[in-house]
Image (tube, rainbow, N blue to C red):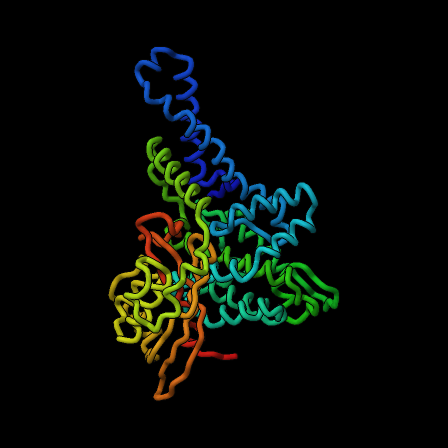
Length: 429
């Protein structure tokens, strides 16, 4: 496979730049030619949109710049990484240097980032079957038990790459982690990062390190790896691995050129983006007085339509009644799964536990696309009852599983399966 030197050379990004360049040529021709203006008067309406598109297109150059500055230190760009974080890290590097920029990146790996990233793992079977251990790694990280979460994540990454590629582990010499048209799997991404992760550590080292050297950590030669920066970099690599896995699912291991988007399609997409941005700017979390309907003793019709708390109540009702098809439809990762398969998986995961009763006790609107619903529920398993208080994460998604602003129409609130780990996977702590 022929690799592209820059991420901006990736086919999907390069096509966008070619289209914008062509549009700029057309606009210039329109400005300089009265005959062209008479023939296509409607083009004057697109001038402001083209200027906005030119400005927004600069965001596609960020991954190359990010990798150039940070890849040698253990950070790489990947699809699900926040572009705002990427941009801020670059700006911080240019203003204050490497150490301050790295501290900023580490600070972004908090509970919110981990929860959002882990939510996506439910959409892939190999990640999903490791969810119990991933949740334990998150718990250890947030409790600052870096000595526990880092080696666990490194070992999980190795097995994941093996099972996903059906070839070799992530850290094998002949591992191929490059995929076409993928930011994480660009030759400057995971492939380069793993080369650093597997760097030989042949002597026992008692001094602190700030890079997750896989061999040194797992073979007991690095004795002071247990710090937040090493753990955060390991989480970042873990999330990048998920984007690589997604590229393989989408058939991007080898080049499969897609149809060139039309200028009207680009403008339509830009209008949607601008409207979403407008709604994000005006959205605010609900105030305390907006939750007069809480607490609610498990009766969903009493809750507001198309609200996160209503979605959780309906989910719990379906679980209580053993209706696994609608329960599966409410999970955020099942949007593209066959009806029978997702119902069977939901029954496998949730069927061993019966909901006796539940109460919706509180809601926190964390972002325009996420809310956390606090519930208290009583379960029964193997003739033994137990009570749990759970924080149920919910996401507002479209039919393709993409996040939306809750002020947009056409979306629905979905439930994150990880929220029930303490119940369905067992509380091991």
